[in-house]
Image 1 (cartoon, rainbow, N blue to C red):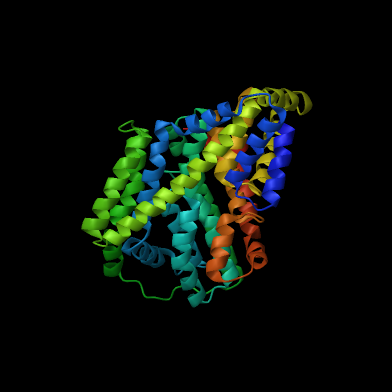
Image 2: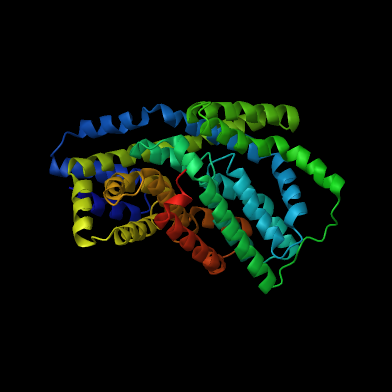
Length: 419
């Protein structure tokens, strides 16, 4: 049945049917044709998968991001970072990387980051004289740091399937996110120096810097508060998500004074739509995962990998190659839901911790977000910059090298992900 579902899914995907719908059609189609299990059980499984308390965190984190990223905060943060590093080689591009890293502690969505930060920074970089494809590529890659710095929507999805602790995943993602930030900033510096990219020539004034720092302070404090609350067990991830939304409302309304009824309505609608998309993917993937588990494919796959590859480092390498290939054609949440049931038993068999596997999987699949043919953040930033995808991909080559190098580190060095 699994082979039949794969065929159905590939046909549906080639017909440009959305991934969630393609998964449902292929799973239900396979059930109808083979008639091994009642279809109503699959429907019950779809609904049951969404009845999880931790999933409540998703809409609240989404709304927090929508409230905080827009408005005066975004421009204030860009001005602050530009004052700090705009004068070094590739400094303005590094501002984009740092902005995405900081906003990662607010929104948890790479797509939201690419849209919000890209809309602000790509026109600014072009105005300074940066090549449009480089500006688009930098922001496309940097946006994926967002899903490593807590809160992270993909980490919540992974925890739902694997049974791992959301709080432990959030804490484990901090160092990989900072390392990815440092690696991408190094690319910007090297490219800026090698190609003599323009730098920000605005004179530095301590008064203006301290004013911007004070203005951005309440927003910069949010990621720190989230980590403290989770690390010391003060609140659960779901409780933290609610508190973060309340905090965003207070900061937006009392500090930045840009909270309007229209902005609140827009944030609620955006959070609702984004959550609906994630839940639809969860429902669709749960059917396929249920069928795969019913046919005992994970156990068979684990046995096959252990007998064929034998060496743990080869098994980990094979998992990464499968993830890379999958991430290029399937959206990240769907890929997490499909691959996790397969890889958790295999990772445990070779002694890899579930938390390390989760970080490795999210870093791996995030590369697909700025790699064709799916490349969600790649398409968003290319559209904003009004440049061809092929030109942006050429500028992304050094970012791919850094991402793959760090991915191998996360895969084979547990100390980089486990706390």
